[in-house]
Length: 446
Image 1 (cartoon, rainbow, N blue to C red):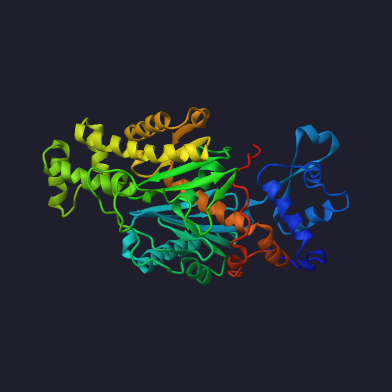
Image 2 (cartoon, rainbow, N blue to C red):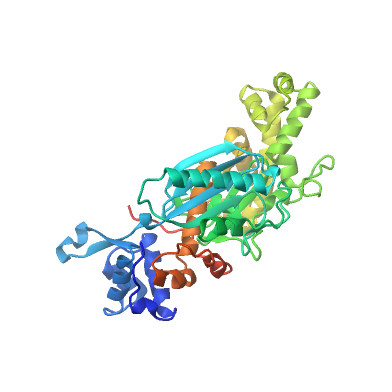
């Protein structure tokens, strides 16, 4: 929605836009609903609040909701955030698949699409395919659908959040330094943000997944590779350059050196990730220790394939002792790493996601057992370790929340609110990065 800015909104950015951003933030995240609650929470006088509310209502960012039962007698109508004011394009890449969707400004997804894709095929093929899917979704929307306000993308490797570029990603040849953010921003004339996939999964979990309402959370993705996202005191912690949580390259013990795709030896993901399970499962098939995997290998080779991590899971479900040992070892190694994290960071919840974690209870049971055995009693007193309900959707949801949080941060809002919307302002991305991150967790009113 775009309207002519009022005189107040044409004023230089400053306290006014900071107050508008704070007001939107409280309504968006359910911490206030009535004008009285907003005035008290923001410590605004009677004269300061009405112009703020009126301007946000005028721009379609807030709506006057139904009168709450507790306040009906006093005629205080509830203010609600308007999630349909704009739309977000979101994409999530894994090592072997990609997912896309359109989301509203509260992270609700529509038009989900998932397909297999090899991230090692390079950025041109991968991003070109996502653009095809985005274009199709936009073409299929009804007339009058909200304009695209932003784009959020997750990648399975280290991402420098400030520039939106992957940096030396071990499983992504050809991607180093590629301007992913700039490509999407230029094509769709909208601000775009790119982050590591585990970070977005962590954000998705605390906003609407199994970790909703938790403030100190570690999300661990065990897929082809292994990575983690860290939420501390309600904020997604990216670190100085965006590489916080890259636990897949923690050194772990091994009987013999195993080379990781990063070039080092005995990294956690080289011994416990999906590629490691496929490698060790193939070895168990060839040496005869796993009859199930030997039969599966023959089937795979007939069509030019090989044993995959999911075959190891299938074998374990069938009672194959070699496969059970492989999955248990993977969980134990991840648990050893997490025990150190628990003692150091003391989270209230660990969420395990990714393709390997979803294969069954063996990995999760081994992680739990190892963490509780090797962590301090005080650090585990309130700790829960759960499996993610949906690693695909939670990443897309996290990408939407990332984009919405950046759009409604005070320094971005100051630039686009006077114009009515962030449409056709891709440069907003550069205005946002490096600023204080918005809190990731706040209970929403129901």
